[in-house]
Every structure is written in structure tokens, then in C-alpha cells.
Length: 203
Image (tube, rainbow, N blue to C red; front, side, top):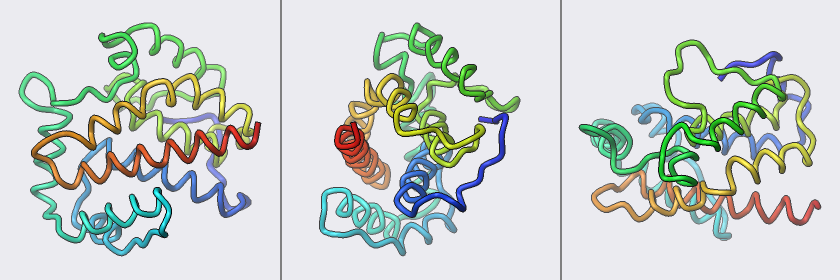
């Protein structure tokens, strides 16, 4: 994604920076497989005793035991495949059963309103989970202008993420024959639960 503004997260409260970092990490892991350097960085993470913290710890453990080439193969099987991957990480597909449907059109309307533009080199539809996570990170940090307030963040989250992404991450978590990306699924599912609860408490 590209934007009409520059990202400036330096003035954000620490908890907002952390939220943005998790969204950015999910975006990165769902857009392309992690290389050895990122796997090494993930392996050093430590989570707390809560459900999301446990998911962080599980991801770190999975990264420690992972080989970059094997993780790349997982990614290809999951999302690329011959004639399509095991999972289709698009809002339109999860909400309608088809790609390029109404959820994508609604997302594009909101993107235009918020000053979010698809980068020229991006070929995937904008309702890919990686792109949506990148957009949420940008709304928090102000990558598309000023940081969005919690009301705007919640509207975007409810409309374009919460309506389907929990099911996607649960499907990723339950996919047979993958190891590292199961932990990514757990992390995403637990993080969305935390986000939903936080938005409810702030309402």
C-alpha cells in the first residue's frame, strides 16, 4: 500500500506502537515467507502468560525450529499452489465465496476516503489479509496522514477485518502439514481477540 502521508509513530503511546508492530508483522508474514534473518528475530521474542503472550511464545518456538526453505514451501502450499493455495486470504472469498465481490468494492471506497492507495507494483486485490493488516498498522501510526482515532480504527476493523479474519486465522491454525504457519494462525487469532476486546472496552 502507499499513502498520502508519511508514517510517524515516534509520538505514539507504547501500547499503540505495539499494536501497529503486530499488525505489521502479520502483514509481512502473510505477504511473503520470512527469511532466515526474520526467523532469527522472531525466535528471540518472549511472550507473557496471557493467551496472546502464549501465542507469541509459540511463534518464537516455531521460528527457532524452522528452516527458511521449509517455511517458504509452507507459504507456497498455503497461499500460491498449483492453481491456487490451500487457503484464500481474501475478505471477499470468506464473506461471499468469490473473489472481487462487494467487500472489495466497500474496502476500496474506504481506502479512497482515508487516502490509502494501492502501490503500483501490487497485483493482489486489496482485501488480502496482509494488505488489511498493513492498513490497520498505517491507521494507527499515521501512515496515511494523521493517526486515525479509535472510532475510525474500529469502523475499519469491524467492517474489513473482524467480519472474517478470525475464521481465516483459525483455518490457518488448523491446516494440516504446516508447522510455522500454524503458529502464525494462532498469533493472528489471539491478536484479533485482544483487539476486539480493547475496542469494546473503549466504546
